[in-house]
Image 1 (cartoon, rainbow, N blue to C red):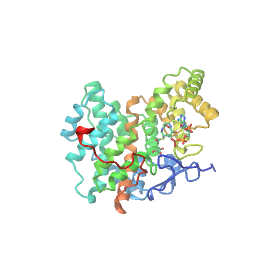
Image 2 (cartoon, helix red, strand yellow; image 1 turned 180 degrees about the horizontal axis):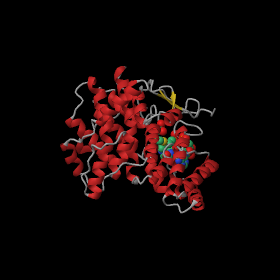
Image 3 (tube, rainbow, N blue to C red; image 1 turned 60 degrees about the horizontal axis):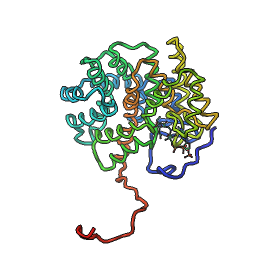
Image 4 (cartoon, rainbow, N blue to C red; image 1 turned 90 degrees about the vertical axis):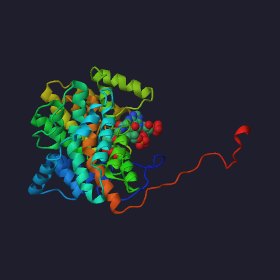
Length: 375
Ligand SMILES: CCC(=O)SCCNC(=O)CCNC(=O)[C@H](O)C(C)(C)COP(=O)(O)OP(=O)(O)OC[C@H]1O[C@@H](n2cnc3c(N)ncnc32)[C@H](O)[C@@H]1OP(=O)(O)O
Ligand SMILES: O=C([O-])CC(=O)C(=O)O
């Protein structure tokens, strides 16, 4: 069992900011559980929709419940015309996370959550629509194509790849995407989830909570790290070059994206799972260089700084091997983490008090206002 990380200092580190029954992070130094199940177990045995059901409704579904849930989500994939029109006006130069944020917010205008009794409907609609939404914008803005989002895809994993590439993905790619969505689904009081909870605590609507969370996830210190990691490793020619470049960055005290974690002490349990998938993809592609570079980065960072790969690092090579453009990496995280965000919104609503911490004042002492002519 790994040692738990000592948590203190700025950034509210180590402070209990609320209660949750949804997940535990780093409780034993390295573990991650969703409602009591180990994430590795879930990633090995479940479909993402089973895990979404677990997180949002409390239990893993049986066969009939899963079939009904998947059918329900499948029937909710259509993009309203007004949303398509908004997406078509967003330029190709936009960051896809900004497109996600705008898309979510726009949906809140046309399919507003009128009362908390609709919170599951609003969440399911977002789960169903997000993959098609981002890939509709991507294909329209980059290839001038208006894609069909109501595909025959059997799952959210398949729907993402199908709407991106315009064809049914291979089983290997669907399996990797499925595991990836499970790994990213929920993570206690991380920055984006806390954003969603703060918003929920004002009794705001689901779309506002999720829109705010998307904005928080976008940053490179959080979900944006998978894109930043890709930008780093694609500049490396081979493992020796990777080592030389990393040593230089460490020397210059630069941050290496995809490494370290606010809570985990010695490893992020999600890394082993996505690393294994990345290796399988590398072998299937017949070109292991990106994987080999990533492995060298991992060993150099541990040797030099005792910093380990977080969930984002090997996602970069895995997504790249599946032909996913780098700027779509973090939106995939959104398609998954939506489950955790929404479940936290529901949990906050069920036992709410407005979240309003205090600040330690560091400004000037009280003073009087001089009339403007005397300043
Ligand atoms: C999967 C979704 C996620 O959001 S996982 C996080 C994704 N973010 C990244 O990969 C960005 C790179 N990592 C980081 O910036 C930090 O490790 C994050 C994740 C923000 C955690 O920050 P914090 O809790 O402050 O780290 P810490 O107290 O453990 O830092 C201890 C000292 O180590 C350093 N450190 C940390 N990470 C890195 C890194 N990736 N590259 C270089 N140095 C790193 C910190 O700066 C800190 O150093 P010092 O003690 O201030 O000198
Ligand atoms: O928990 C965190 O601070 C960041 C993280 O790994 C996640 O949100 O998946």
